[in-house]
Length: 73
Image (cartoon, rainbow, N blue to C red; front, side):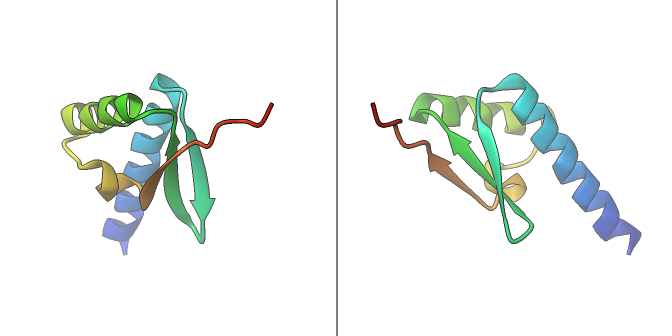
């Protein structure tokens, strides 16, 4: 049971660092984190950051990643 708790905390830790370093949004769907990013370039930067700093693949941390829709004027 402690391994599951440690894994959950680790994921939350990575998510907080991503939110603090990038202008992205984290959405929650049925208890799973989904990354909302602004551009393909930003997604690549976030992926590199997660890999370099936490030795994890982006989709090991987030359930999915979706591009933000432009706001209507």
